[in-house]
Image (tube, rainbow, N blue to C red; front, side):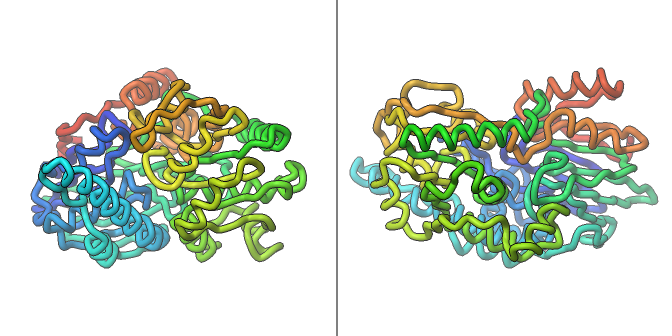
Length: 465
């Protein structure tokens, strides 16, 4: 029995870890690398394994940095099942096809430029057909439903509280009379966050892999963050500007709309035009509606009371490209929620191009921004950015409100780990090195545990635990 680290080891995106037991090879996640053009080009690199010899994939949740290379795995010969929580399977049907569409359109755009220069053309990373084939191979499970996925490999999902369907993955491995229990946190949500339930505590494991996206910091109190958003909204109304919110289509978009609905009268939201400018987020919101049994107590009560999430009478769903382009003719009084969440593609880039140079514009950053992404450059207050080959002056006010993060902070991560009664060995993944090191040091002071930072190619002999 062996665990090998591959993706999201020493960095945040590209989650992928390799389990080998009983002659079978199983992947935990197969995610996309995100960030700068140079970083994203690594997605085309060969896998350190033969895709045709992977027997199964166990997927923690639908976000592209965890699921986004599944169609590529299929393209390169993988034909096995992909095990996921039921809601994750449904959300992947939206996310992966959208990712493929974006990739195909980007390849077409790049090829027009390459053709004019007489250079070789490129293929998209994968096609819509590859994405559909990956989704077709998905097998859904309920939370706490145990399932043998291969001889000697049993999986069980527990609610991670990160996005709808996000799972803490417990894998029980049996080989040669020995048994080992490996727990992978996936991405953990904050405790006491709205809509979804808190992450589940597990009591026993032989080895734990945990994310460390925000392992080096504590989030602000959520109430303070909500108050800050309210101030930004009121300020934008006085300044007659637009508000742009880059948001991940799954999770963050729904939470932002939730808070707008909860504070509709207090923030005078009725004086704005609110746009959800993301076909994918619109579809994802419909999936959220289909899984009310996964809501927390407060959201369940609201749903029963009004038959929907808190209502927004002035919410407009922008499904088409023409709908999106029309928004850019509005000089003030618009709130635009659009993807991608890191501003490295999608409709938000066009809105930024049309609004960043305006002093009255407010940009609210509500999620993690990877190194090299346009969103990261805005967070770091660069005075100019390049968008579609043009230099754009950044005169807009940039607000970073980390309290809305769907990720656990270092206190949440430590609290979750302390739920294990036997204090199992801990490996840190899915975090920048500085963040993982800070969490390692914090956890050592708090618990005495000496966690290890995972590195690509590092292997762990599970028999020796």
